[in-house]
Length: 497
Image (cartoon, rainbow, N blue to C red; front, side):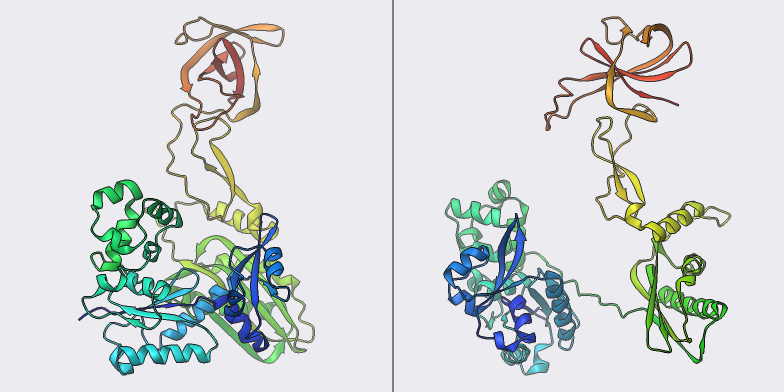
């Protein structure tokens, strides 16, 4: 069966959403702005503003110089993405395989499904009319590949339907930017005179890869159907929420604790059945007088353990004032993640320390998880630059695979190395023999080294004009030091325990 993909592009979705809430702005020139480098820059316009010459990328000042009565509002990308997800969910009426691409487009896999709507042409017309009734402008195209459908919806004629086996003819006249390549690659192609897709098709692939990278040929093959492009459907989980309503309002803490324990059991059961775990739970209490009170507890890593959440709620339940009684409590898994399986030892105990988890959970709920930080390895050999601090729950790039330095590092590292007197041979391979500490000279009983650390060639650092040879030494009074020689000068950089 021939594959059929539909690409839907919403060129004015940001302003269309504004117009849906305020229909009076339908024919009013409207622009949305963001703040960039202390300037207000236009990031979206409606068709009325576009006709007046207002373009994305202009500053608000320049736009108002062109059109004095231009209506300007702040751009909210989060709301746009939320609306796009809602539209994608609605598209599931037509096909179960729907996917968001970028911030303004949707893919539909309509393979074997268009006949249910009267054929391909009838489906496109019904989809267009339905979106128009919602007040959303759209450009739609249907083709055998997602890449070709996307190219035609963005750069071709809306409503285009590509016949079987005519992909090359359909997209060859489109600009190279229709291949979803980066703007930088598109500019490079235009500089050498390649402006249309047809200019690329017959060029040697190896030369294109060498000069413009793999993405260009990959996108071209995907658009022409020579390479597979998967459409990953959006997975929208139903909210994990449990609720208890009492026949008689409760006021005692013991009754509230019992009800919370019961709700936790029900919620953990649902989490387990869904194969996910929670990192943040919200408890909402509704009182007889209609007032609401909310408690939230979070944990550092995903879990399905009832006792873990119960212990954290115990610390906060005293905040709740039942007043004349509580009639409803609701427990909601506000943040969930894929279940994190952990290795256990042969006797069933956790390899990871439970005491550490409890400490992090407690501190995180009291002072905030951003305030609880950990050290992570940075990709540098330079002492003092080989680690950084990150929140315990941060999603920063994982550098844990960065290799451990070949030599030991001191527990105490000085922020600025101190020049020190050392008696040593000019041969850098021979260990120092005497060290000056204060007004006294001490003999060195033990020395290990040298460990040579080179400056990072991609960064100029005046403190690292050349390599350093580091030594671990212990003097006659038992002091263990970390020294280095830079040319003929010695420095003290840290202390071992």
